[in-house]
Length: 450
Ligand code: NDP
Ligand code: 2IT
Image (cartoon, rainbow, N blue to C red; front, side, top):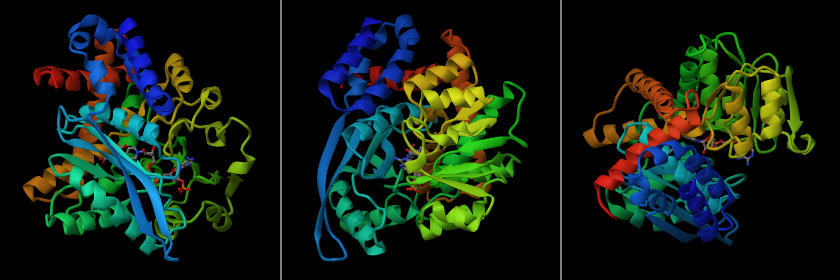
């Protein structure tokens, strides 16, 4: 379609080096063709042109002092993409790979994901090329404070509400929140993922992983299957991976893999969650330690991965849960999963599968839940945290988890029904993109030319 090609060209021309952003835009606009063909109001109102260029891109320098007294400098940004249906909302990523293209792809995806949750949250994302690995507590705190020294002027409980992502968990949110409060003299629900004793929500820590498994359950119901007794593979070993594994085990499934930036574990007897939490949440160490302490586990260093392959996806399984990072599952990996009989892929990470891998899953007609639908549980409970903060009323774990469950069921049925409505039955990529887009685009039209 001319309109979508023009949009892709516009993005490539304006942001030539931002490959991940091109990829995210391509995946979305290609799947919007049925709705764009049916209604010309979107093209007439230049909705795609307005969606791919963020409302605001804020770039700043973060200057801090390390434990040796040396001054360190990092780059950081907050990209406020779209606020048509609510305040900008999305995580902060601290990782050395962070660049504008990565934050842009994440912020763009966040618009549609947040729309799918049915909550009043717009899309944004931010981060820094700061590497938290190997830093002391003091260094982490000073970096977070220096980061907030600039960010505070751009955010607010009704303006822009950041949260965690890779490298940003409860500890970092604490330091960021503390500095925001100090600078503004306000106790606002300006960040989510806060600790429970100062405004956090029960079930937020678990939400992305639990939600991703709830989404898999919904997809599997359609083929009269369950996760009980099934072998599953999971990548990553951070927040999303850990709580995906916890929920899988509660349901009687057997997750057998985890991975990190240095390597992977294959534990045929099933992942030991207590050990995993201790290594990653307490010791903040490498998975090599897991293999030293659990004899049934085999560790493979990333240096020994075969070229062009992520070995996690080559372990035979019933269901796969990519939960580490973008483009961690390529076409070779997708083919291996399918060949070994995998029936379900539910994405905890953002854009973990390459476009070619996604095509493999769609063509094979397996249960494939794209990240912006399957991992929306995290931001959904962030939205619920905002609701609790606004009403000054904390909710119980059971109540919040039930709400999360309902939201995930609803996202599945919305994506599935929308796919049917637009003649692409079973294609949850198209269903999720069209459903997420329609709500935001119609809100933009209602609100005028802005
Ligand atoms: P964490 O920082 O808690 O964990 C990230 C995990 O992935 C770690 O095990 C890390 O390894 C590994 N990892 C990170 N980068 C790479 C890389 N380049 N190659 C291989 N492994 C890598 O982050 P989260 O669990 O929060 O995030 C994981 C994914 O889920 C991301 O795609 C994020 O955007 C997405 N997501 C997160 C949500 C949330 O609520 N937290 C919500 C929705 C999506 P190591 O342990 O060595 O650092
Ligand atoms: O990618 C994501 O949805 C997140 N990292 C969570 C964002 C949030 O605001 O909770």
